[in-house]
Length: 400
Ligand SMILES: [Zn+2]
Image (cartoon, rainbow, N blue to C red):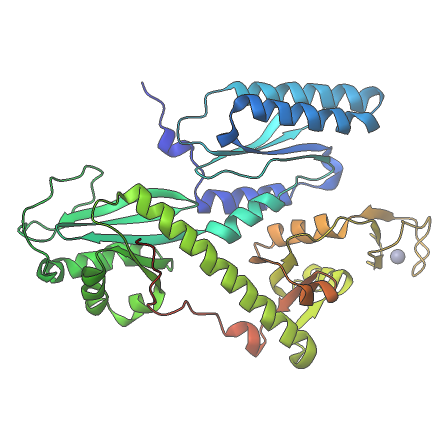
């Protein structure tokens, strides 16, 4: 029997579940190798990357820690040798390092993941949060003179939800993966109104996902006119595409447009954060304030610079006092206890966001950097209740 590659590609829902599970792994449960790979570079290049990273990681390891690391590394390379399927373009592997190492999580993606490898007390889930922020899931309606297809593009993986010919066919839309022969004639868009109820039902089944219309510009406009106001409000963009454009090509274009849109959303959230910090008290910035808001479950959205650096800090596990910029003291200056642990604010912020399933917005820009590179919107303030809306039907000229 042929393996089901379709199933092996990670979808948004699965990614969210794995992020939460990995984030909940206690720091005391033993070190973890986190390895993120861009498979489009080829297996040999991935192995070279792992070997290079391993040689610098093992420099600091001695005795049993070194032996356990080598066992974990062997398991990692074994996993890489397994067939991942033709659609796998990115891989994230998390391995619990010990004398009998185990794979904690193995995630295959339809898009490449930047190469990155770490050995740390907790899993490095930052690249997973980046993927989620960048790609999420959107609905794509590709409409051409004789047919239309509706697809969901989930973490960069397009899957057809329905298709139809809309000129001569009177048959209702069907959920089927096969394509029909294009029906002859038409370009008036009249066939579209016959299917609009079904189109709306399929789009509603996509939850609250954003929407792209693509293909013939005139038919996109007709379809837009037929859609209900709630679905129109979910439209991010109309993408004019040539008649011979395949669904796969259309999905590449909508993905690029979605990433641009997402980066706009992230910038808008960063602007709300800055306003909230300066005037409204609906947001906090800086590692210490953000950490305490998140620990107290007062955070609504974490906003963090792409290049937010690792650093040394500490936290007292008895009274909660922390300093995000100093080496751990022998005794807590607040309570005098010795239950003091080192902490990297970057890892801790990401871990808490994963545990609490908070949205994470990744941004560039100096303004946030001046405020410490990180902040969060707080729950239940007027600012956080006003969710951003997509841009209305604008067009992006992608046809030469
Ligand atoms: Zn203390």
